[in-house]
Length: 161
Image (cartoon, rainbow, N blue to C red; front, side, top):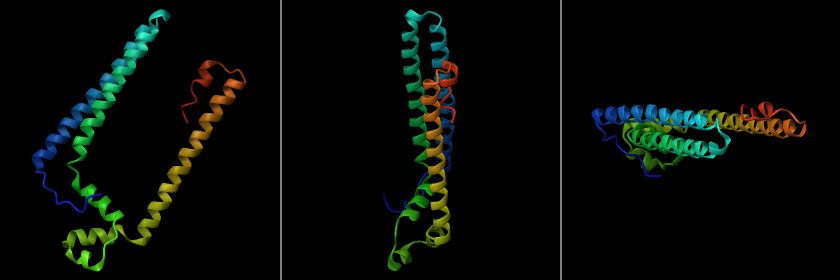
């Protein structure tokens, strides 16, 4: 990771990036929903269903690509968040700390506060446990529903957890 970077984007450049990302997110969601609608239209006849599913996947990929691309272009203007992340991961010597400006030095000391780091570690572990439990519940639901001969509607909802 590159060291601390001074914010060189103007307020106008940040506003433009935010505006473009907002439009792209809305357009990307619209393209994804269009893909789902197209798949639903093709589902009427089973011999052309594969075309609808294929078209849906292409439109979903395009919509997600738009969202990710423009979201990354917007995210690059958030240098304050980048610098905060850098300050949290780096270990500075006293000499290096003295070279930072006052605001950066305070941010570094705040980010490396042991109490704050402990809370962040606990939060990360809690999120990991929640995701693991949700995955286990989903897999049990999927395989148990299939083994017990449940309807496709019941086993098809395994992704809810």
